Image (cartoon, rainbow, N blue to C red; front, side, top):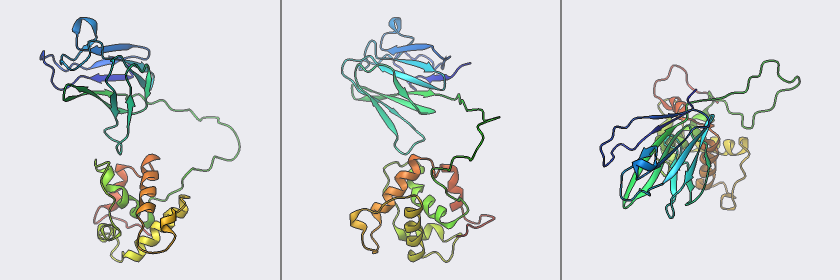
Length: 249
């Protein structure tokens, strides 16, 4: 069964088609400037003759950087700015993203190589261990107003702007009003404070007072929510106007 699919850059100097390369677990391909020395030729003067190697490892893959001086960046196009850096000479760096984009710096250009890891392996739980189930790390109810507040805070970064500034409390109020007409600065701030307690975040020293400054707290909430997938892009439906059911606190 194929577990890794490699999609070459959109354009290459030799005009080759973007034929997808499919790898089964344990298979490996090399990429670089010279076709005779690599499985995938990227014929750009700024790409090393032997630039790197991709190895399929079941449900994930590894990247080896065979260049002498270039750092490669592997981005998660679906994440909130998630990326890893693979330095020159690094071998078999594991890449955890289901959808990835290797960015190769090449003499002023940035060449993307897409890698997909569609295979998902799951633990089978039939006949599992007896006893109490494990308590969830974070317990959130997606029907509550506090979750709608959290979704509104996360929305800009989930919409593909990983470094977007967080919305102000007033902007959150405006975003929530179609489904929550009584939303106000006080109620939104209350829910932000509640989320900080519920998700076990400790306020920073600059937030010792109860005034309107909540930037540090909001940043911590959004960072935690996006890192652990407490809010996903699909969850933004709670912000859609005229939904059949409205969230309730």
